[in-house]
Length: 153
Image 1 (cartoon, one colour):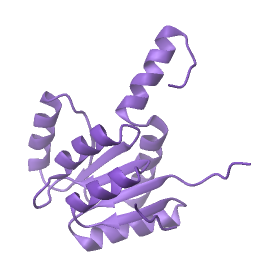
Image 2: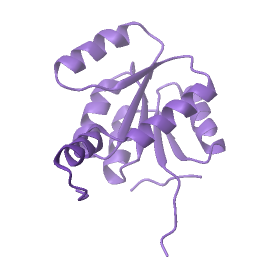
Image 3: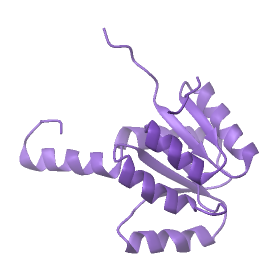
């Protein structure tokens, strides 16, 4: 019999207190979550063991959250993505990503834990852009064919 595992979420923010707080909130809600404070390291973790959901701050030194999201989307197409930011400049970066064909959900900080959990549940339910496209194609065609990190609980 297959055991059910809670969704795995990778939380990335260069501000350790924010990443840790979000991870604690997710743990209390029953998710497996890991905090990461560097986008480059987060990409290594996601590539080695793709999470069900990536939550990333947008503005970080080096690799931005948007750059990270694009790379995770390419390497881990089944991973859903939520971006968070408290800075208006993030929206300019998002517009540039949209012009390149990437459309990510962005949440404004601060975000209330209840709102965060609602958005996490929606992102996990809706899935990644690839999963949404596959569902759309199955619905359109009438076919129902299914097309190295340590996680803490």
